[in-house]
Length: 378
Image 1 (cartoon, rainbow, N blue to C red):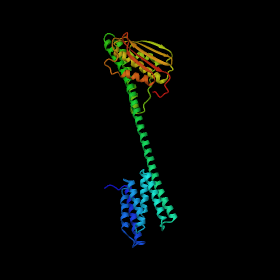
Image 2 (cartoon, rainbow, N blue to C red):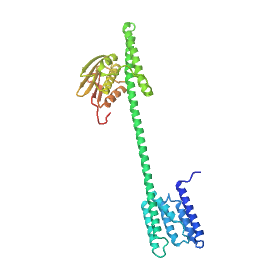
Image 3 (cartoon, rainbow, N blue to C red):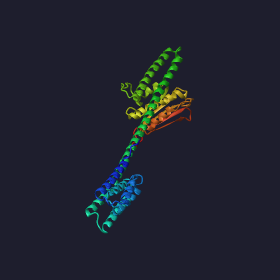
Image 4 (tube, rainbow, N blue to C red):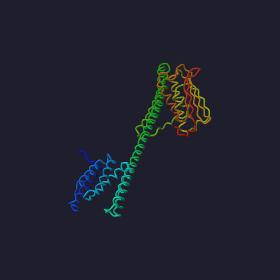
């Protein structure tokens, strides 16, 4: 069985109090003056009060008319006036302020006119007190409505803030997943490609040139060790555990020779401008782009020759990787490497272009500004 609402309890308490007060007044002060209106009008007003939350204006009118008719014509002067205070408060609390003010003003005006026509039933002080109660009932109803609206608005703002916070957290989580996926692709794709190239070389020269096979196997060992170290570092971020910091230096354009040597390709390198004092994010992104572009040459171009040009001029780092192989880069591949390179460049406010060369082969050209944007771009 459901529990009655607070409004219903208040209505029932008020009705019981009014009916009990009316009955007590009849017994103590007017035992012989009871008429039909003494019973009918209180029952009508009290019955209407039970519906005050659903039909506030209609209940207010019924109660006001019943009270206005009760005191001049009923025989018992009971406390029915309390009902109109409750009805006025309810109408104002539910947003019907104009009907509440109009009903309250008309009720006071009718009482004032009635008191000037003959025998007075209330003195000036009691009239002022009743007027004060009418004003207080309407004002209190308006205050409670405004407070409830304020609390609802504050709650909505809190919900909106929480929703925005959750959306921001999901966005950041998505960006972090994308960054981790890009890192894993760059690390694993490059190193495993190198392992594949060196393993092929070792198998080819195992019988004819054992010394070259041994060198290739050593390269496979070192590359796989580096792959495991970088993979463990990346997974450590996901697990959020404390591990020893990596001891090997991070990729850098200042050590571009090491990147070229690790690719296993015959690369013609052209460097212009200083590359040893670059912003960290630009230096790391540039090194990743060089490594991924050389990896794609090794995988897809069908040649072991490439040209790498890095220029530091006009406030930007420009990286170009070109090959003239017969293969088409990314044929049969997923394209994640190119997507990752473009995302790295865009995140720094730069650009990346990639596509076939008119004279044959494939090229990757990236421009990374040294000065980061201040307009909110990431």
